[in-house]
Length: 499
Figure 1 (cartoon, rainbow, N blue to C red):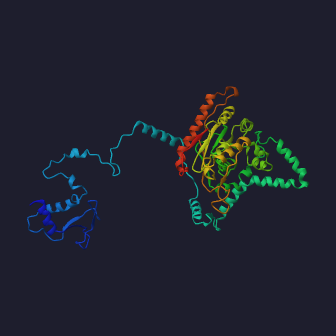
Figure 2 (figure 1 turned 90 degrees about the horizontal axis):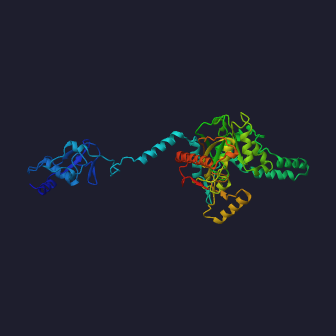
Figure 3 (figure 1 turned 45 degrees about the vertical axis):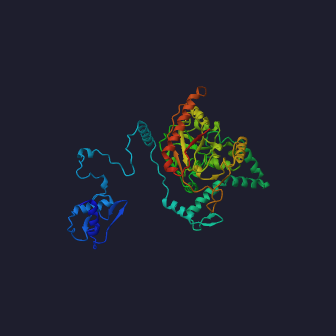
């Protein structure tokens, strides 16, 4: 009998279905057909014939079953296509030949290629990077961070501004207060000084103070006078650091018998991370690097601001002038010649602050080699420091969208040696408008020190300066590649080195 005749008889005389043995109603199918493949609820199925035995028409049960399954294009008990099965009477492939077939994953329809030498080199470089720089983790409170996100999401909103709820924990209120006081310190101290000047009875005190301020060399003599360790350890700075929150990460040990120049990147708008890590003990610098006395450096003009100068001197800040750096690293210390001392320089300066955009890391470093020369004169090792999140603390106008404003900023920078960033952040009681920095994590990573041999002024060679500068840039690139995925997951571009 032909297949066509068999098909006709099967349709009329037999109703085949694939059913589960546990199904109470055998007439109800328990399988579905998807793209020509019968899928069952259980791995193993049995075929039943609801019409009883096959009618006496000469049709073999196996032939009928094969024809029924051929309509769905599958082989009984499998998901193989019937068209792919060998035909009756065809010669089957030997088992050895069939075993040589390569089975690929479902998502891969091409043959796998052997890794090239270039791939092996990339893997070796990546492994060497992981061996050189350890894994770091942000040890923040998940509950606190999650609560802050919920507060922002559920904040009362009016005129497009989200306001902070009234039931903010006292801890966070104190953090905001600490950052607010530090951000307003210049305006506060200057205003207080002019208030004192308005009282004639205080002039006998004000005039000598002004003379002392103008003639004092405390910011550059290298003696670290007026530095207050008690003030640096004050509880207020822990509130300051927890506001963001900030974390200082150590990757390598720094022997206390050497002297160091820390290069901090990026500048950001106000360098809050540099202040928290190196001007205070809120992040535990002295515990992570015992025996090292570090001084954060700032513009010499800041030490000409009444009362504010005393504030930053007590925090250990010093002038960033060449004279100041040389004196700090050549005097005092455990050996009387600067051993165990360190300075932190925000190398990009005010020029780099104009490049501070959230999600970016543009470092003005290509032609800045003065710190390398000072390191060679004093024999200080150079330590790269990369602050992930510093550029995310504020928003500011883009130079591309406001070119005329950018020209004004550059003119002020060339003329007055400082710039005027047009920025905005969050407010004290809202999340969208104000001059307070955003609450975004700061991760300050201290990298591998670069050994520098002391050289006399006459022995400084351009080739050696360029070599040390190149090694410094390379270490920064290693740190970026190692930690960017963990500390900068929302970046919009890779790190750039600008001239």
